[in-house]
Image (tube, rainbow, N blue to C red; front, side, top):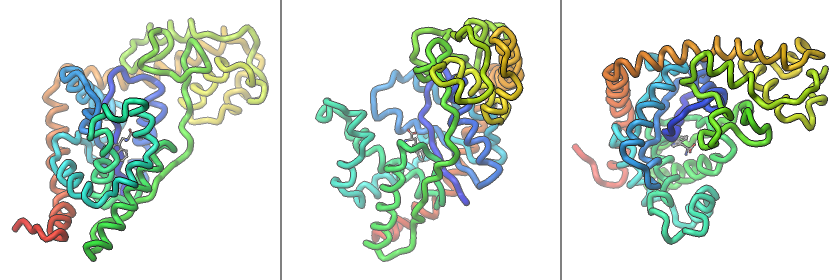
Length: 331
Ligand code: TRP
């Protein structure tokens, strides 16, 4: 199994990102050969402030590594440093059909009423995503439900290219949907997802929060006056209580029911300090590694440069194969 996945660089990473996408990647490293990258060429399909984008690429790369993506085990880099991605995307855009891209629901959602004013890059986004994966002969793409359609498109592009040019060049990858990641909600509103764009800092736990801040945010997290119930059904209609139990369960790799088995009958006065301790124990080492990267930006630069060099090497045979299949051999 060879896995390729990308993530768009964003700032202000929080607990929801960690317990969702990032931890899933960390675990995949034990199951498969992994190639993980920051999709910064996807980020520029909409306007981004350049200084902020640059900060986010580095910040997110540091966070991935701090959270346990091991550059010794996995390939880690950012798109922009590996020109093969953009190159193959062009070649594949000549195989992908306009009718196929017109069906992509993510473009419809992202462009909304402003279709005519959207960038060509936003429209062609899934073709670049296909290049990201096909370059490395990946067998599986760990994605959420929302990206399944893009993986289908990769398969269509791979098969059409292979058929049109009578080659067995590209591997058609499968989506790897995986166990549904814990949905971590806002600490202020159990019905809203924990989000970097929530105006309230108290709504989320950032990966950079110090121990006191984590404890304070959990202490002030919205709850209700009832004790914890004996079973998960008892959390129905109590979204904030459910969220805190979910966080506890995710951190200890347990089912929510196992958390309730331990805490049933206790109030939040007892549960919250235990949860805060657990969060601090999980996040403190991650924060320490992030601080190390901040103190030594050259270390991160070296990791990304080495990752990009290795990725270029790994991508080269497939890229050359694509040029050759098209009748454009390059030596
Ligand atoms: N489009 C993906 C997202 O927004 C990110 C991404 C870019 C990706 N290239 C990829 C995911 C290749 C899987 C494989 O989540």
